[in-house]
Image (cartoon, rainbow, N blue to C red):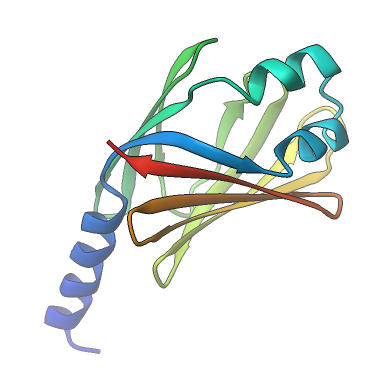
Length: 146
């Protein structure tokens, strides 16, 4: 592949993910959170957290700002480089993101039990679809650009 084509592909991916995204709907998210061990009260609150995500990509580096009814968090990561992250319920993770085609793929291990949480992000039309898998339970959070 030529350098020019590689730059074009990187710019396309950059343009795809960059932007402000607001949660629109969830699929099986409460079931997923239950499998993660999150109590019922926190699951109910998280299902209606009004999450907003801002994604900014520059090459292989990402800046992510998450704003919800519960917290605001800013994260910087580089593709393929392990980093630490805490979920809103306090669950601590360690892992990394990679880019496969037009999809971001994350693999994170829980620090408390070592179990794997996988996640993907892909843009389809005007939606950012974030999918999760933990111990065989799948869920999705679908965001719209705003």
